[in-house]
Length: 349
Image (cartoon, rainbow, N blue to C red):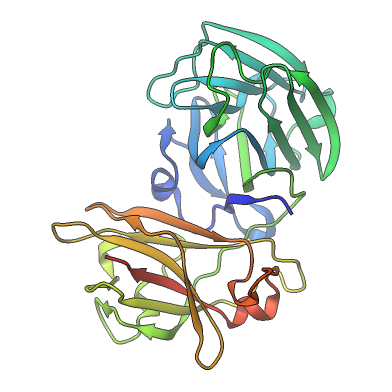
């Protein structure tokens, strides 16, 4: 199974939360209805896009999702970049094909799609990749290399096009990617749903958000109002920040919550992500980690990476690709294990 780094179904935040989820937003993209399974999706039109960070610098990766476009004009669709340069572009052409360009000395400012000093066409898919106003699942798989680079494009889970032994690094560029852009630079409208960042294609997958419904075994925090801890952290889709919240005051304080039952009953679970929205309210260092509590007598806590918290609300995510209760070797999540687990956070310091 490929490594899954990040995923987004655009259902746990609204338009106001787009910037919290992304490192940069250009224009005014929106979260709108019309996503798969009755959910929401991202909409980008003229000069609107989002920039999403990878968890680390990568040399091999895949961006996949359920996309739709009016294919009204040739437009940027994906841009792949490191700290200074956009080194690879995928442009959605007006005929429905996806053209790949390697960029030369494309310095960008402020997270924009770079105006390249130079670029070269590597190749383009057949025009049938996108059909105007028809949703399609597309995965773009990239292996970076100066002479051994590869690009594989999957349409609805089937290999549709590939480029082998090409330069995907550009000229004099560090052969790693730290973030990618998704959106439109022209009048074309692009919709995105169920976007997954992984080491290789995982196929057509669905992303569902599950919100707290009950207090769990750990209730060390103090709710801002009332006595039900989960009730002050269950906002859907948009976190309400200081309206209500739980405060963890002391190191090792924990909160855990039971969540909605698995929404895609009977399906395979590839990964689970715990998402925290948090800030600190006092001077000094504060670190927070996501946590999964597995069932049992007693249960066990599996904490993620501790992350520093600032004085402004920020989003913190931890991917659990394997059920931590399964021991070693780790086994995939199943529906019963997901439904029995509790999800929350621990104040590390």
